[in-house]
Length: 261
Ligand code: ADP
Ligand code: MG
Image 1 (cartoon, rainbow, N blue to C red):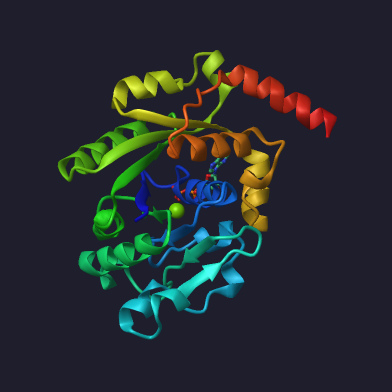
Image 2: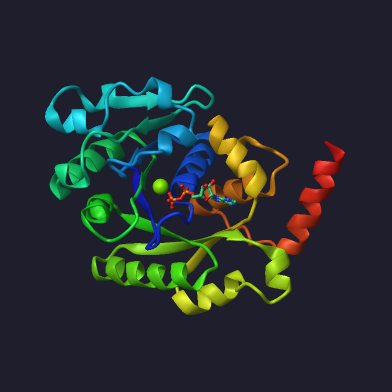
């Protein structure tokens, strides 16, 4: 039996879909059998980040409606073995899938895969309830902004009330701004939210947008500090003890590498 992990937040736009695509890729590159599930029905974009949008034939809604078997709806990534996507329908609403239906899908998927990563929609309405329905554990994504942290706190409370243990990813940390005391650092955020830190992903405006547009997750990029952060997060998720680096060092290292290559 695999692990069903919901990737969620409170606030939208903090990087859930980007995290799901990159972490799924990183876990598959290590040799895990992974399926990423887009639970953002009506607003799907996980397929775009993974570059799989042109290959969607069936979605989770087709499985529910009995138009196809679950296995038929899984889209295989061409670049890495054992990474698959279950896409969301764009023609339906979040209320068209029930909590029970979502739970069944997650149960079936986890019997065949090591990791089932569920990309949640923003907010705490039906979409969120569906996304957490089959989850064994959760990853909360937040940016270092007060609004995002406050919303993350609410979601952590909701997850705790359902006995779903959550770990934290701080996304888009801008070390120059932290150094100038214009941004909270990851330790400040951990102190506020009081959950286990799974990892920190630095801000990378240029490359991540290019990579999303190209459908090539940064995890593949050996020289990107963001890619390296994702690969470390995958290893931590698998139980390895890998410290969160001081990001000054990561920046120095990244700059050095980008000059060399
Ligand atoms: P969500 O799924 O939470 O709505 P997305 O994954 O769609 O968020 O990301 C929202 C935006 O933030 C996207 O434009 C994405 O490219 C950008 N983004 C995500 N992570 C980073 C990062 N580490 N550095 C810079 N931009 C990022
Ligand atoms: Mg999203």
